[in-house]
Length: 401
Image 1: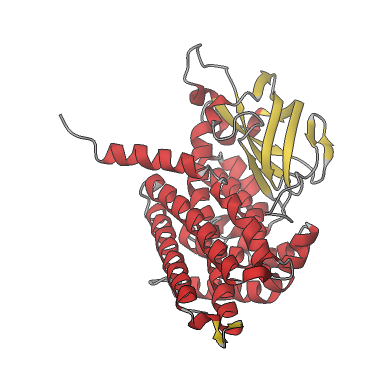
Image 2: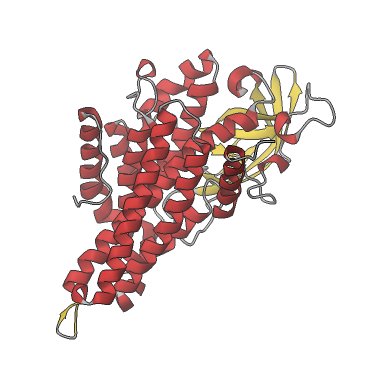
Protein backbone atom coordinates (compact mmCIF):
# COMPACT_ATOMS: atom_id res chain seq x y z
CA UNK A 1 0.00 0.00 0.00
CA UNK A 2 1.51 3.32 -1.08
CA UNK A 3 1.56 6.68 0.65
CA UNK A 4 -1.21 8.28 -1.40
CA UNK A 5 -4.89 8.40 -0.41
CA UNK A 6 -4.43 7.57 3.26
CA UNK A 7 -7.16 8.62 5.71
CA UNK A 8 -6.30 9.87 9.18
CA UNK A 9 -8.49 9.41 12.24
CA UNK A 10 -10.02 6.03 11.40
CA UNK A 11 -11.09 3.71 14.19
CA UNK A 12 -9.65 0.23 14.61
CA UNK A 13 -12.92 -1.21 13.26
CA UNK A 14 -12.79 1.00 10.16
CA UNK A 15 -9.18 0.05 9.51
CA UNK A 16 -9.99 -3.63 9.88
CA UNK A 17 -12.94 -3.39 7.45
CA UNK A 18 -10.83 -1.54 4.88
CA UNK A 19 -7.93 -3.97 5.18
CA UNK A 20 -10.33 -6.88 4.63
CA UNK A 21 -11.89 -5.26 1.57
CA UNK A 22 -8.52 -4.31 0.10
CA UNK A 23 -7.24 -7.86 0.55
CA UNK A 24 -10.38 -9.17 -1.19
CA UNK A 25 -9.87 -6.70 -4.07
CA UNK A 26 -6.22 -7.68 -4.54
CA UNK A 27 -6.91 -11.43 -4.45
CA UNK A 28 -10.41 -11.85 -5.91
CA UNK A 29 -11.11 -8.84 -8.19
CA UNK A 30 -7.96 -7.46 -9.84
CA UNK A 31 -6.74 -10.86 -11.20
CA UNK A 32 -10.04 -11.54 -13.04
CA UNK A 33 -11.52 -8.06 -13.69
CA UNK A 34 -10.13 -7.42 -17.16
CA UNK A 35 -11.05 -10.87 -18.46
CA UNK A 36 -14.63 -10.61 -17.11
CA UNK A 37 -14.93 -7.04 -18.43
CA UNK A 38 -13.88 -8.00 -21.93
CA UNK A 39 -16.53 -10.74 -21.90
CA UNK A 40 -19.10 -8.34 -20.39
CA UNK A 41 -19.75 -11.07 -17.82
CA UNK A 42 -21.62 -10.46 -14.57
CA UNK A 43 -19.17 -11.04 -11.65
CA UNK A 44 -21.32 -13.58 -9.77
CA UNK A 45 -18.48 -15.05 -7.71
CA UNK A 46 -17.21 -11.61 -6.68
CA UNK A 47 -20.70 -10.50 -5.64
CA UNK A 48 -21.14 -13.65 -3.53
CA UNK A 49 -17.82 -12.91 -1.83
CA UNK A 50 -18.88 -9.34 -1.03
CA UNK A 51 -22.15 -10.67 0.43
CA UNK A 52 -20.14 -12.88 2.78
CA UNK A 53 -18.01 -9.89 3.83
CA UNK A 54 -21.19 -7.97 4.74
CA UNK A 55 -20.54 -5.17 2.25
CA UNK A 56 -24.20 -5.05 1.12
CA UNK A 57 -25.21 -4.18 4.68
CA UNK A 58 -22.39 -1.76 5.52
CA UNK A 59 -24.63 1.25 6.27
CA UNK A 60 -27.79 -0.64 7.26
CA UNK A 61 -28.37 -0.27 11.04
CA UNK A 62 -27.38 -3.17 13.27
CA UNK A 63 -30.99 -3.61 14.42
CA UNK A 64 -31.80 -4.70 10.83
CA UNK A 65 -28.80 -7.02 10.51
CA UNK A 66 -26.32 -4.58 8.95
CA UNK A 67 -22.97 -3.28 10.19
CA UNK A 68 -24.32 0.19 10.99
CA UNK A 69 -21.22 1.88 9.59
CA UNK A 70 -20.77 5.50 8.49
CA UNK A 71 -20.87 6.99 5.00
CA UNK A 72 -17.11 7.51 5.29
CA UNK A 73 -16.48 3.78 5.89
CA UNK A 74 -18.75 2.93 2.98
CA UNK A 75 -17.08 5.46 0.65
CA UNK A 76 -13.60 4.19 1.52
CA UNK A 77 -14.73 0.62 0.79
CA UNK A 78 -16.14 1.77 -2.56
CA UNK A 79 -12.81 3.47 -3.33
CA UNK A 80 -11.03 0.15 -2.75
CA UNK A 81 -13.54 -1.84 -4.82
CA UNK A 82 -13.43 0.64 -7.72
CA UNK A 83 -9.64 0.39 -7.63
CA UNK A 84 -10.18 -3.27 -8.50
CA UNK A 85 -13.04 -2.92 -10.98
CA UNK A 86 -15.43 0.02 -11.13
CA UNK A 87 -18.36 -2.09 -12.33
CA UNK A 88 -18.44 -3.98 -9.02
CA UNK A 89 -18.78 -0.71 -7.10
CA UNK A 90 -21.77 0.10 -9.33
CA UNK A 91 -23.49 -3.12 -8.34
CA UNK A 92 -23.22 -2.09 -4.70
CA UNK A 93 -23.97 1.63 -5.13
CA UNK A 94 -27.53 1.40 -6.41
CA UNK A 95 -28.32 -1.18 -3.72
CA UNK A 96 -26.86 1.13 -1.11
CA UNK A 97 -28.87 4.16 -2.30
CA UNK A 98 -32.16 2.25 -2.10
CA UNK A 99 -31.30 0.90 1.37
CA UNK A 100 -30.36 4.42 2.47
CA UNK A 101 -33.65 5.84 1.16
CA UNK A 102 -35.66 3.16 2.98
CA UNK A 103 -33.66 3.74 6.19
CA UNK A 104 -34.16 7.52 6.01
CA UNK A 105 -37.68 7.80 4.58
CA UNK A 106 -39.42 4.40 4.76
CA UNK A 107 -42.28 3.42 7.05
CA UNK A 108 -41.48 1.10 9.94
CA UNK A 109 -43.10 -1.78 8.04
CA UNK A 110 -40.97 -1.04 4.95
CA UNK A 111 -37.78 -0.97 7.03
CA UNK A 112 -38.60 -4.27 8.72
CA UNK A 113 -39.66 -5.90 5.45
CA UNK A 114 -36.70 -4.90 3.30
CA UNK A 115 -33.61 -3.91 5.32
CA UNK A 116 -32.74 -7.26 6.97
CA UNK A 117 -32.80 -9.01 3.58
CA UNK A 118 -30.94 -6.13 1.91
CA UNK A 119 -28.22 -6.39 4.58
CA UNK A 120 -27.45 -9.98 3.52
CA UNK A 121 -27.76 -9.22 -0.20
CA UNK A 122 -30.77 -11.53 -0.53
CA UNK A 123 -32.77 -8.52 -1.76
CA UNK A 124 -30.75 -6.43 -4.21
CA UNK A 125 -31.74 -2.85 -4.95
CA UNK A 126 -31.81 -0.59 -8.00
CA UNK A 127 -33.28 2.88 -8.44
CA UNK A 128 -34.83 4.56 -11.43
CA UNK A 129 -35.28 8.27 -12.14
CA UNK A 130 -34.08 8.97 -15.67
CA UNK A 131 -36.18 8.54 -18.81
CA UNK A 132 -35.17 8.27 -22.50
CA UNK A 133 -35.92 11.87 -23.43
CA UNK A 134 -34.90 13.92 -20.41
CA UNK A 135 -31.50 12.95 -18.98
CA UNK A 136 -30.68 15.21 -16.03
CA UNK A 137 -34.03 17.07 -16.12
CA UNK A 138 -35.66 14.90 -13.44
CA UNK A 139 -38.59 17.29 -12.89
CA UNK A 140 -39.75 16.59 -16.47
CA UNK A 141 -40.46 12.87 -15.96
CA UNK A 142 -43.63 11.57 -17.61
CA UNK A 143 -44.01 8.11 -15.99
CA UNK A 144 -47.33 8.17 -14.13
CA UNK A 145 -48.93 6.35 -11.24
CA UNK A 146 -52.72 6.42 -10.85
CA UNK A 147 -54.57 5.21 -7.75
CA UNK A 148 -56.91 2.26 -8.31
CA UNK A 149 -58.40 0.92 -5.08
CA UNK A 150 -55.62 -0.43 -2.86
CA UNK A 151 -53.07 -0.26 -5.69
CA UNK A 152 -51.36 2.23 -7.92
CA UNK A 153 -51.12 1.52 -11.63
CA UNK A 154 -47.75 2.58 -13.09
CA UNK A 155 -47.12 3.38 -16.76
CA UNK A 156 -43.99 4.75 -18.42
CA UNK A 157 -40.46 4.05 -19.62
CA UNK A 158 -37.27 4.43 -17.58
CA UNK A 159 -33.66 4.51 -18.76
CA UNK A 160 -30.11 3.86 -17.47
CA UNK A 161 -31.15 1.47 -14.75
CA UNK A 162 -28.00 -0.01 -13.15
CA UNK A 163 -28.72 -3.54 -11.88
CA UNK A 164 -31.99 -3.53 -13.84
CA UNK A 165 -31.82 -7.25 -14.56
CA UNK A 166 -30.14 -8.57 -11.42
CA UNK A 167 -32.09 -6.52 -8.85
CA UNK A 168 -35.17 -7.75 -6.99
CA UNK A 169 -36.26 -4.33 -5.67
CA UNK A 170 -36.44 -1.11 -7.70
CA UNK A 171 -37.19 2.36 -6.31
CA UNK A 172 -39.07 4.00 -9.19
CA UNK A 173 -39.91 7.71 -9.41
CA UNK A 174 -43.31 8.48 -10.98
CA UNK A 175 -45.66 11.42 -11.25
CA UNK A 176 -48.75 11.26 -9.01
CA UNK A 177 -51.23 14.09 -9.39
CA UNK A 178 -53.67 13.08 -6.62
CA UNK A 179 -54.09 15.74 -3.97
CA UNK A 180 -51.93 18.19 -5.92
CA UNK A 181 -53.91 21.08 -7.48
CA UNK A 182 -53.19 22.20 -11.01
CA UNK A 183 -50.18 24.48 -11.10
CA UNK A 184 -48.32 22.58 -8.37
CA UNK A 185 -44.56 22.67 -8.96
CA UNK A 186 -43.58 19.51 -10.91
CA UNK A 187 -41.19 18.25 -8.23
CA UNK A 188 -43.98 18.34 -5.61
CA UNK A 189 -46.13 15.83 -7.49
CA UNK A 190 -43.62 12.96 -7.60
CA UNK A 191 -43.68 9.74 -5.62
CA UNK A 192 -41.17 6.93 -5.07
CA UNK A 193 -42.56 3.40 -5.39
CA UNK A 194 -40.81 0.29 -4.06
CA UNK A 195 -41.34 -2.28 -6.81
CA UNK A 196 -40.52 -5.90 -5.96
CA UNK A 197 -39.69 -8.06 -8.97
CA UNK A 198 -37.99 -11.24 -10.12
CA UNK A 199 -34.44 -10.97 -11.52
CA UNK A 200 -33.98 -11.49 -15.24
CA UNK A 201 -34.86 -9.98 -18.61
CA UNK A 202 -38.03 -9.79 -20.67
CA UNK A 203 -41.41 -9.55 -18.96
CA UNK A 204 -40.40 -10.27 -15.37
CA UNK A 205 -43.92 -9.75 -13.98
CA UNK A 206 -47.30 -8.57 -15.32
CA UNK A 207 -46.88 -4.99 -16.55
CA UNK A 208 -43.10 -4.85 -16.08
CA UNK A 209 -40.52 -5.53 -18.80
CA UNK A 210 -36.69 -5.30 -18.61
CA UNK A 211 -35.81 -5.45 -22.34
CA UNK A 212 -32.14 -6.48 -22.00
CA UNK A 213 -28.67 -5.09 -21.34
CA UNK A 214 -27.62 -1.84 -23.01
CA UNK A 215 -24.32 -2.41 -24.83
CA UNK A 216 -21.84 0.11 -23.44
CA UNK A 217 -18.33 1.35 -24.26
CA UNK A 218 -17.16 0.58 -20.72
CA UNK A 219 -18.67 -0.09 -17.29
CA UNK A 220 -19.32 -3.63 -18.45
CA UNK A 221 -20.24 -6.69 -16.40
CA UNK A 222 -22.88 -4.75 -14.47
CA UNK A 223 -26.23 -4.75 -16.29
CA UNK A 224 -27.57 -1.37 -17.39
CA UNK A 225 -31.10 -1.54 -18.74
CA UNK A 226 -34.36 0.14 -19.61
CA UNK A 227 -37.49 -0.47 -17.55
CA UNK A 228 -40.93 -0.44 -19.18
CA UNK A 229 -44.10 -0.24 -17.10
CA UNK A 230 -47.43 -0.90 -18.79
CA UNK A 231 -50.22 -1.17 -16.25
CA UNK A 232 -47.87 -2.34 -13.47
CA UNK A 233 -49.85 -2.71 -10.23
CA UNK A 234 -48.05 -1.72 -7.02
CA UNK A 235 -49.75 -1.88 -3.57
CA UNK A 236 -50.32 1.49 -1.89
CA UNK A 237 -48.24 0.16 1.02
CA UNK A 238 -45.19 0.29 -1.26
CA UNK A 239 -45.22 4.09 -1.57
CA UNK A 240 -41.92 5.03 0.08
CA UNK A 241 -42.73 6.68 3.39
CA UNK A 242 -46.45 6.01 3.00
CA UNK A 243 -47.38 9.38 1.43
CA UNK A 244 -47.30 10.67 -2.15
CA UNK A 245 -45.60 13.86 -3.30
CA UNK A 246 -42.30 13.31 -1.48
CA UNK A 247 -40.48 11.32 -4.14
CA UNK A 248 -38.31 14.08 -5.56
CA UNK A 249 -36.86 14.97 -2.16
CA UNK A 250 -36.32 11.30 -1.29
CA UNK A 251 -34.49 10.64 -4.56
CA UNK A 252 -32.33 13.78 -4.24
CA UNK A 253 -31.33 12.73 -0.72
CA UNK A 254 -30.30 9.34 -2.12
CA UNK A 255 -28.41 10.91 -5.01
CA UNK A 256 -26.56 13.23 -2.61
CA UNK A 257 -24.93 10.30 -0.83
CA UNK A 258 -24.60 8.62 -4.23
CA UNK A 259 -22.45 11.53 -5.38
CA UNK A 260 -20.01 10.86 -2.56
CA UNK A 261 -19.99 7.28 -3.83
CA UNK A 262 -19.20 8.40 -7.40
CA UNK A 263 -16.40 10.60 -6.05
CA UNK A 264 -15.05 7.52 -4.24
CA UNK A 265 -15.20 5.54 -7.47
CA UNK A 266 -13.23 8.25 -9.25
CA UNK A 267 -10.63 8.16 -6.49
CA UNK A 268 -10.34 4.37 -6.74
CA UNK A 269 -9.95 4.27 -10.52
CA UNK A 270 -7.43 7.13 -10.41
CA UNK A 271 -5.42 5.30 -7.73
CA UNK A 272 -5.27 2.18 -9.86
CA UNK A 273 -4.24 4.19 -12.93
CA UNK A 274 -1.45 5.84 -10.92
CA UNK A 275 -0.27 2.45 -9.63
CA UNK A 276 -0.15 1.09 -13.18
CA UNK A 277 1.59 4.18 -14.52
CA UNK A 278 4.25 4.45 -11.82
CA UNK A 279 4.99 0.71 -12.06
CA UNK A 280 5.27 0.66 -15.85
CA UNK A 281 7.48 3.78 -15.83
CA UNK A 282 10.06 1.95 -13.71
CA UNK A 283 10.05 -1.16 -15.91
CA UNK A 284 10.04 0.34 -19.40
CA UNK A 285 13.44 1.47 -20.74
CA UNK A 286 14.16 4.03 -23.47
CA UNK A 287 17.41 5.74 -24.41
CA UNK A 288 19.30 3.54 -21.97
CA UNK A 289 17.32 4.14 -18.78
CA UNK A 290 13.86 3.57 -17.23
CA UNK A 291 11.38 6.11 -18.55
CA UNK A 292 10.71 7.07 -14.89
CA UNK A 293 14.09 8.82 -14.98
CA UNK A 294 12.99 11.11 -17.81
CA UNK A 295 11.82 14.46 -16.51
CA UNK A 296 8.75 14.43 -18.78
CA UNK A 297 7.49 11.26 -17.10
CA UNK A 298 8.33 12.52 -13.60
CA UNK A 299 6.23 15.62 -14.29
CA UNK A 300 3.31 13.41 -15.27
CA UNK A 301 3.69 11.28 -12.13
CA UNK A 302 3.87 14.41 -9.98
CA UNK A 303 0.63 15.76 -11.46
CA UNK A 304 -1.10 12.38 -11.21
CA UNK A 305 -0.13 11.86 -7.57
CA UNK A 306 -1.26 15.34 -6.60
CA UNK A 307 -4.64 14.79 -8.26
CA UNK A 308 -5.13 11.40 -6.56
CA UNK A 309 -4.36 12.93 -3.15
CA UNK A 310 -6.57 16.00 -3.69
CA UNK A 311 -9.60 14.06 -4.91
CA UNK A 312 -9.34 11.63 -1.98
CA UNK A 313 -9.18 14.49 0.54
CA UNK A 314 -12.29 16.16 -0.91
CA UNK A 315 -14.22 12.89 -0.99
CA UNK A 316 -13.36 12.14 2.65
CA UNK A 317 -14.35 15.67 3.68
CA UNK A 318 -17.76 15.39 1.96
CA UNK A 319 -18.46 12.01 3.60
CA UNK A 320 -17.48 13.24 7.04
CA UNK A 321 -19.72 16.29 6.73
CA UNK A 322 -22.74 14.11 5.89
CA UNK A 323 -21.88 11.78 8.78
CA UNK A 324 -21.86 14.76 11.15
CA UNK A 325 -25.50 15.48 10.25
CA UNK A 326 -24.74 18.66 8.34
CA UNK A 327 -25.85 19.57 4.83
CA UNK A 328 -23.21 18.41 2.34
CA UNK A 329 -24.71 18.98 -1.11
CA UNK A 330 -22.06 21.61 -1.95
CA UNK A 331 -19.18 19.41 -0.79
CA UNK A 332 -20.63 16.26 -2.41
CA UNK A 333 -21.05 18.13 -5.71
CA UNK A 334 -17.50 19.49 -5.55
CA UNK A 335 -16.05 16.09 -4.65
CA UNK A 336 -17.94 14.31 -7.41
CA UNK A 337 -17.01 16.94 -10.01
CA UNK A 338 -13.33 17.12 -9.06
CA UNK A 339 -12.80 13.37 -8.57
CA UNK A 340 -14.42 12.45 -11.90
CA UNK A 341 -12.45 15.09 -13.84
CA UNK A 342 -9.17 14.20 -12.14
CA UNK A 343 -9.85 10.51 -12.65
CA UNK A 344 -10.19 11.05 -16.40
CA UNK A 345 -6.94 13.05 -16.46
CA UNK A 346 -4.94 10.60 -14.33
CA UNK A 347 -6.14 7.65 -16.43
CA UNK A 348 -5.17 9.46 -19.63
CA UNK A 349 -1.69 10.26 -18.29
CA UNK A 350 -1.21 6.61 -17.27
CA UNK A 351 -2.38 5.65 -20.77
CA UNK A 352 0.23 8.00 -22.29
CA UNK A 353 2.97 6.58 -20.06
CA UNK A 354 2.16 3.11 -21.43
CA UNK A 355 2.64 4.38 -24.99
CA UNK A 356 1.46 1.96 -27.66
CA UNK A 357 0.85 -0.76 -25.08
CA UNK A 358 -1.88 1.36 -23.49
CA UNK A 359 -3.90 0.73 -26.63
CA UNK A 360 -3.58 -3.02 -26.24
CA UNK A 361 -6.35 -5.00 -24.54
CA UNK A 362 -3.61 -7.03 -22.91
CA UNK A 363 -2.90 -4.13 -20.54
CA UNK A 364 -5.26 -3.12 -17.73
CA UNK A 365 -5.03 0.60 -18.50
CA UNK A 366 -7.06 0.02 -21.69
CA UNK A 367 -10.06 -1.00 -19.54
CA UNK A 368 -9.67 1.97 -17.20
CA UNK A 369 -9.52 4.31 -20.21
CA UNK A 370 -13.00 3.15 -21.25
CA UNK A 371 -14.40 3.18 -17.71
CA UNK A 372 -13.40 6.67 -16.57
CA UNK A 373 -15.80 8.64 -18.85
CA UNK A 374 -18.86 7.11 -17.12
CA UNK A 375 -18.00 9.05 -13.98
CA UNK A 376 -18.36 12.33 -15.90
CA UNK A 377 -22.07 11.60 -16.42
CA UNK A 378 -23.14 9.23 -13.61
CA UNK A 379 -25.27 10.71 -10.75
CA UNK A 380 -25.57 13.97 -12.70
CA UNK A 381 -23.23 15.24 -15.41
CA UNK A 382 -20.22 17.43 -14.67
CA UNK A 383 -22.19 20.35 -16.07
CA UNK A 384 -25.08 19.69 -13.66
CA UNK A 385 -22.58 19.50 -10.79
CA UNK A 386 -21.19 22.91 -11.73
CA UNK A 387 -24.71 24.37 -11.79
CA UNK A 388 -25.42 22.97 -8.31
CA UNK A 389 -22.06 24.19 -6.98
CA UNK A 390 -22.53 27.65 -8.50
CA UNK A 391 -26.05 28.09 -7.08
CA UNK A 392 -24.99 26.93 -3.63
CA UNK A 393 -21.99 29.27 -3.62
CA UNK A 394 -24.27 32.18 -4.54
CA UNK A 395 -26.54 31.21 -1.63
CA UNK A 396 -23.59 31.17 0.76
CA UNK A 397 -22.08 34.41 -0.50
CA UNK A 398 -25.26 36.41 -1.24
CA UNK A 399 -24.73 40.15 -0.96
CA UNK A 400 -26.89 41.54 1.85
CA UNK A 401 -29.09 44.61 1.36
